[in-house]
Image 1 (spheres, rainbow, N blue to C red):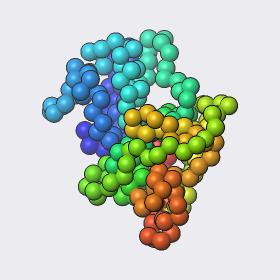
Image 2 (tube, rainbow, N blue to C red):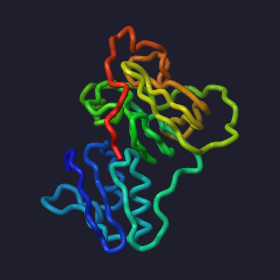
Image 3 (cartoon, helix red, strand yellow):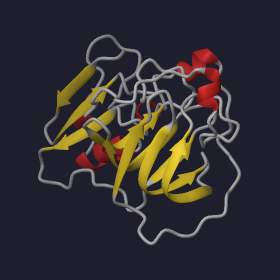
Length: 220
């Protein structure tokens, strides 16, 4: 599987897999091993083994956006969520589900962005948190916040040079189990891995000499 991009056309749906985005959440191979057949040589993605709706469900359950689908049957494509969320994953990345627009170009509905500081594909997660031994709770405490008047809409993702992720737009920050941490229309999220207020930035990136580009490569 690796980091390459694979696309397999089926009768009703084409399935695209971007190995560079995959964080190995394994929903695909555990829930539908008939479609995504693990540990085999050669062809391992079989779009015609499931219905178009099932394939779309598989894609929507992929937190990193590594799996996406293009329908040929006239059915509804994947649409932006009704509530923009970012899920704080235990000892892992920030999993966004929103109508994201990345500073510098490109966009996505699903993406996992690095918060350990070690990824070589910043701002995206490349699972370096595992090798680096990154530890950070996926259950930060709830902070008082008012309900958002609008819960969806475009979300601007701006990686600050040598600093945090600057997020502009309606967003609900939630724990790995779905509890609300805070509702915001703008925030700065730690991506150096050292903040004492994770998932929020507290300026520690300056003390530790964190380095990361402010203009990410476009990942469509």
